[in-house]
Length: 184
Length: 217
Image (cartoon, rainbow over all chains, first blue to last red; front, side, top):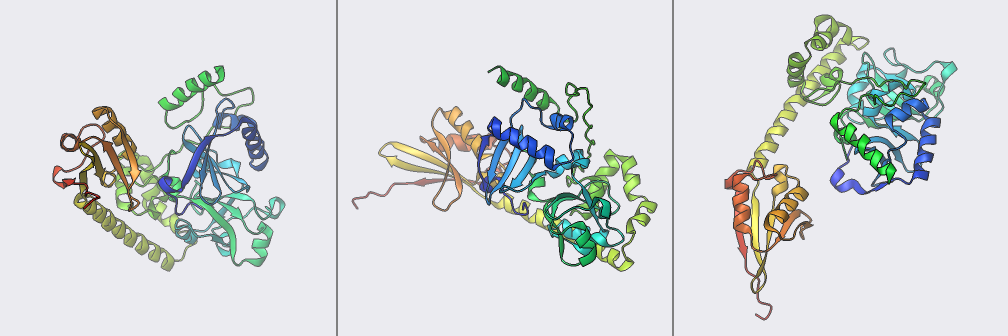
């Protein structure tokens, strides 16, 4: 989503977010992420308003004091930016790719099933299976910090059984143009 | 309005510490989960464990060695390199290393080319007549030297007490338009590196004069 993103040409406008909309974002975040209200309060104090940065192709980024925190495509799920995810790694369920997949991921490729099901990868066990279309943190073999944020295209159990094709679509990854933007 | 004032205070607090670690005044009775303090590489901005996939590994290594020797040992010691290989086959590992080296060379070449281009690019100060004795001055090509055009325009405007703005020219490139004939002063400012106008070699600046063609001819 942010493989090619130029703040100078891809941003259509910035507007402060209405408080009613902020309330709905807040409740959506609380329901979609594994986050406690107190933690969200520390990240995004109630008193402070987000700024909605509208970008091309229906991408919205929400920033606080110019620092991107949350983004969204169209009306889709809300994703934390990678920097936010590094600070609060527990907010999204995690999947892990093996070492061979890292360099492809850093080039913006989507994650294929074998990279997740192989020995170096990790998928949640059957008891905590994730359905398709869940935002996930993408970790990498042998690393502690997340390398990307993605959305599952298959349920995790399906990934294990099919083991072919795109499993997680990469939304933002380390070193993409959103990563390069530290403030908007 | 009270709300706004408070927001301002918090904003000022956030501004003093750029990496908002934890708000000391935040914790309500149930403690918020503290954020993981992150360290990013000063060269490639990745977390240091991912430097090996970046395009400047050697420089990253040096940086980490200088700034965080203990982490350097953790990531680049012999045994770390041993365990790193992990499940990957030897063949794939050597390929990866080759790729990284290649990427590094490429990135260096690219940076060099960019620098060369930057040094070769020209800043053009053009004076064009608007009518009989009124002129506009356009400054073109400042962005090649990493100058924020908006800020530069603002500086010109306040310096010369005239209008100055950033506009797109017919080619779709951005330039600064200043009303009034200030071409000599602009040249002087660039030579003296005033304010935001930094890092432009004086040889690269060119003064151009453009007479307006008479419509009747």
